[in-house]
Length: 367
Ligand code: SF4
Image (cartoon, protein in one colour):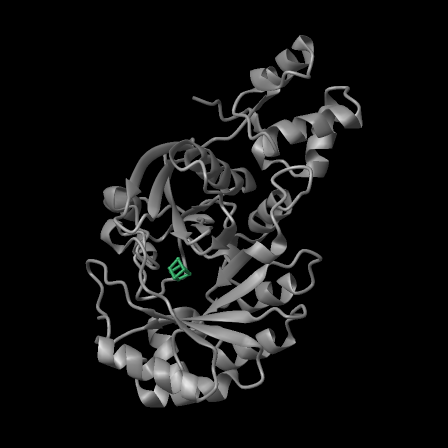
């Protein structure tokens, strides 16, 4: 059990860790040692920092803790996908999914407790938004999962990270960026930016801001419609920033060489899966270096939408390819344990969360 007023060392960035050590009267190299213990060795206890003196460890323990999440439940799908339910120190549940794919393992991480964006096909939307995760809670999801894999499947390691779990990452901009800076720090976890993807429903001003950053993860955009009429219905955020505005921002985004934007397109029977939709999509995306992930809907209880028939899925994908789009069909992973795209809803806690739609002060309006 951690005490809320202790500083979580996982939540501090590199410079903040050095500054924290300085507050304790320690030189820079000590701060760096602490950083390495927390982010390279991923220790969970200050007592494990064996190259720090006893007095310094005691000082640290009086002021700080390491990591705040506990793994409450692990479910394993028949396809090898694992879903972790993690509890925060204020008793909220979040979910993180590990998806093995050949040599690779992708972790899909959450950035918020619930979500405010209200995409109509998504189970998380039904929870509403409770609060943002801080950078430590985002980073801790990765370290908890790394440790789990080391125990249960020692040959495997997390190779890719996608911010596609619960929440809209760009609605929690500062903490998400801070977590990426931490995870890519060479003296810590040392992940490559090229292996990290941030997925957005289309918060255009934040997308524009992301383009100004020195750190630039891969970009995925949840599009899901070929017309404003349909997107207004399935993604209400489109009424604020419509397809034209969103694609203008993506065209202006400073994409690095040999990188492509990924467009996610959840296929909904009778809504956005026609041959005419494929044709409109090709026209919309013309001139954008991109690929399209076609994701047949993973139905969840209470969803008003259906998954298209295999024939309709094939026809849509073939038309996209014929029109020259790099199109990939994403087969659902972990759908038997509700770990597939759009299904993360803390089912065991869903009712409690729905009644808990409390807005915390750290949540900015969607603007
Ligand atoms: S699809 Fe993503 S952005 Fe949309 S409601 Fe679900 S979690 Fe939020």
